[in-house]
Image (tube, rainbow, N blue to C red):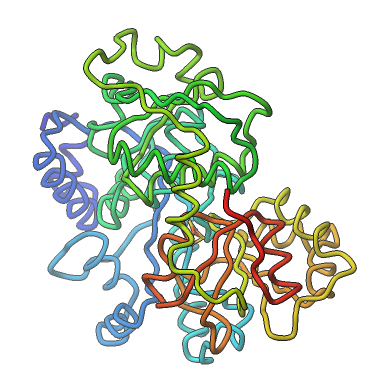
Length: 430
Ligand code: F3S
């Protein structure tokens, strides 16, 4: 790879050992990818904490978070002092919500360690947003901005909805990117790779967040890691929550990192433009109608057998304030069933807004709970004895049965809240 003078100086160690390790890592990574150069970035989304038991043990053994960063974020054989970050960096979701240790089954020791990690993170200048949806709470890159983001549901939103540019990075590459302000220039940083590869024509109206989740799940299965272009969208323009659920589902069933919605997303003003002017001739148009939707509904509900539900989880990806408002409206004046628990997940900043607007009070009065920083899939935390869950997220329906061995029902938000209040999932096939 060609380096600028500034990059060469970092690589040569003129800016200290941590930046030298970071540049060494970026060079190895970029060369493996076939990148010819690095690109400047001032927008990184990363996970650098140590909330897993394995990393906590490592930190205890080696005595510092610098050791954890050196080993797991810089692939460095020796521990180096980690300087403040150069690039604007926000922290992704963590292992649990430290504000509700009993419900999450946390020991005091774990909470203390968590606080230590947060002090380390903020000491480096990393924004402790602690969410898979940084674009909701202050990290909103602009169109064309080069980024280095982890977290598949955030990456697909960044590329597709915001028109910013990132690949799905890993813990090591973002660790190096935040220190140097560089990332290899390849993949979705390059115009040619952002063009559509598959055309999906809608034959039905797609409306609710559950509908958009099912569409995303279907498309991800079909195109895997390519770039779908969806046309035929009628009715309401999908809002942030619907696109969040759509992208999260497409990146779970497949590995989609970028899509175009004709007439909606920024790089698809027309069908032709979404394909970069060259429509694929050898790939058949894929169609999504009532039959496809009902097959996806069946797949997402494949593990559901008992209609008696003991846990309803909402907020994957983390709920928007609009979704919390909707949930509060659906719950107002009702009670969560005595055999069921209702947990919602949202970024910490939105939880504060929910408190301020009175939604937390309504949800808690009904017997529900709002958490931040994590989710059941990340924390492996569910109410004690959970066997059957109801979810309004296709992504969570994809992962939770596999991670926790529970049965899962997938339905609309209203169906899930009904399940929480009646203790039974009565959602109907799509
Ligand atoms: Fe976020 Fe957890 Fe879903 S971190 S995307 S809520 S699996």
